[in-house]
Length: 313
Image 1 (spheres, rainbow, N blue to C red):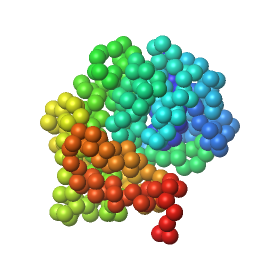
Image 2 (tube, one colour):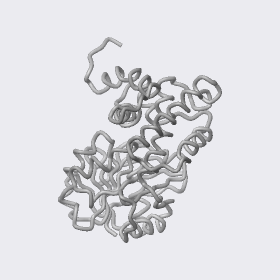
Image 3 (tube, rainbow, N blue to C red):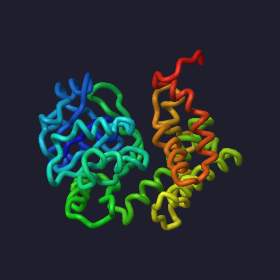
């Protein structure tokens, strides 16, 4: 299969490298110093599952240099989705599928508005990885996984081929019965672990140890579940339980990406996590008081980080 990784950061770069190792043809869309380093020496991946250097078939900042591919793995930040969708048009052929791996639940609809519904899969994944420097990423923890499927959940040969490609690459992958429910289940978890961590500045174990902050986490999960149901997502009833079990299993000293980014004063995924729950809840008349408190509490710093607010703090 021909793959293009649009946004070769910690997760996209890792997946592209493993697929290439398994014999797939993988092109990289990147820019700046990261692209220059990849062109010069390949993409270096330091991984708990074995270090390697990945040399893509093409490394470019122009998708037209790549042409139509079978799969686009979209690894850009959620706020860059629409811009990326417009840019990737030269890589979209009649059978191409676009696999978004961002946090949040809105990527499929945002991509479909630009590329058409037939091109877009629902997707999610997990890894602890980050960019060390130009042309260099580190996979630090978690056995990486991806979950994906057609947005309407119908069985399709292209998703089966993609599943087999990931399995050959040694990446855990599956096609859940309901990809939208899977996206919202992850949303329940990340809003609690990220929003709770960002507003308290405390690691996971501390938040679990205090009845007050643990109750806050559970409220976030159940509010998000209520919004999902009101949005018409068919849930089994196990999603919230799974999210809470995941919160219980997070390492005690762990912090997560959105929490760290906010604490460092950089732009974060606040708008597509707790902010999205608030916004989507309003659409269907579901109150989200705890998510709203977190969103409003973090919003001034988020706006400052994005240059949207001048402030002495």
